[in-house]
Amino acid sequence: MKIALIAPAWHDPLWESEKEKSIFPPLNLITLAALTPPKHELTILDESLTDLDFDAKYDLVGISAMTALAPRAYEIADGFRKNGARVVLGGMHPSALPEEAGAHADAVVIGEAEGSWQRLLADLEDGKLQPIYRQHERPSLEHMVHPRRDLLLRDRYLVPETVQTTRGCPFACSFCTVSQFFGKSFRFRPVEEVIHEVAGLEGEVIAFIDDNIVGHPGYARRLFTELARLPKKIKWFSQGSLNIARDEELLQLAAASGCIGLFIGFESLSPGNLKAVGKAVNRVEEYREAIKKIHEHGIAIEGAFVFGLDEDDESVFERTVKFAQENRLEAAQFGILTPFPGTPLREAMEREGRITCNDWSEYTISKVVFEPKNMSAKTLQEGFNWAWQEFYSLGSISRRLGLAKKHAAILWALNLNIRKRFNHFLERLRSGSFTVPRPSLAK
Image 1: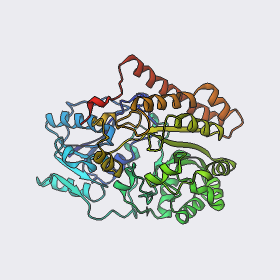
Image 2 (image 1 turned 120 degrees about the horizontal axis):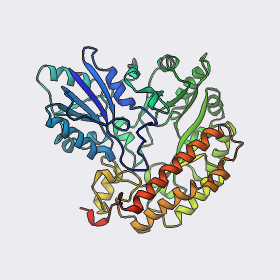
Image 3 (image 1 turned 60 degrees about the vertical axis):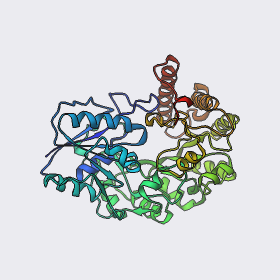
């Protein structure tokens, strides 16, 4: 069969890529490609880099989508089905709302694809394609296939080397889709298999796309120890929880193994907010000392903060930005609380009648789609806009980074790129070519 695997493009100006370059390749699709029997002809289409040709003839089109990308995924699916292709939808959003996705596809894969994808291909060849495919047990990560990186336009990605070592998260934050999709316990790849894959990569800068690479300290210690022993010295970054700062040995091993940066979810400066969303592992009183310890090991921090939690009022924006600046975070991502389908947060907000928009394309964490408790939706949107603008002002970047920080050139380039993207976001917003949702769209 002739198969196309497609990653829809972002159309929110804060997150979209320039056509010339994207940051990461679609690891999910090249992993799916590696699960596909070699007799099939495969094409990877990353819409952020290439235009789609709906007249191209494929026997099967597979599309993976997060919630904000679901409307575009459905448009793509409808376009290819119109021209005779069979279409399968998968990923976080179709897994949460399979009936909705099923209206645009011949089949929906719920959850992780290992096992389901192979059965789907066999059924399609036998003329017995089923509308729903799902695994009753979460797949083991032992003997995982190596992704088909040969199918990528490698030079079009800033960080082409992406690797996954674990799946699942026990924190189960109420607003997060990860534990709903991958489960509430950690699963691990054997360390030796990860090392074998890393050793075979072309580049020396690697993104481990785990949701929490230090979530299980024992596994992380073994992994970092072996990474440090590689003949080829690498630099890597990933997502991790703040409790890495409580383990000096783990911090030392991370730095020795080549860690140059961690994306860390601080989420809030309010203990009450953290408790309410299930992130009690974060201790606000430890934030400053933890940041200091991580910085002392030469590891940069991109902090993630959520605006619009129930204890937040209009003072939250200035307090949060000031905290991030005073602690010289190398980067920050500010997000608006978003009730994604399938999460406990959405269930609670639906019960309370607080959802004001059900257009999934607005679920980009940069727009208000619910009614906040202690401020207006307008104040939340404007505060979010101000936070990005202030944190990525030239004065703020200069004070946080200076010239003496490790990897200063890379960090300046990152900050200036983010500044450029956010200014584009504001320009589109002010011009009216890009809008924020209004409560009148609700229900």
